[in-house]
Image 1 (spheres, helix red, strand yellow):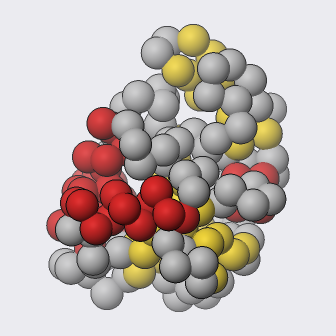
Image 2 (image 1 turned 90 degrees about the vertical axis):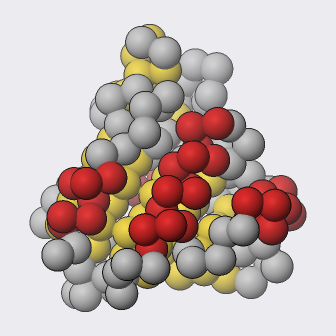
Length: 162
């Protein structure tokens, strides 16, 4: 079972572990307007965050929103937030250059990508993780942040798509 940390304490991750070289699972998450957002199967930067309502997740989403305009690769941020809360966050923060999706219904994304926090205080949300997929939907970069409170390595993410 894969693990990460929350403020230095080990937490287990549930679901199917996806690694570099694997075909990224195709799943659907829900946008703020309740439409569907497709994850997997094409060139994407997929950022899993626990909740947009935390400082680190908000900063990460703002950073990807700024950098998304510099690439042709679709950026999708996935959290367990309700779609309405995600929509309010995007409106308030001016998030317009990426897609934000909620995995609240069935946790399909979290289970398919192996990023579901299985225990500890954040049990039931996604850990902080990044997957970069190429045009064929193959994972070419993966980062499960060492601690859920850490931001990802943005430079490595954008180097992977060059």
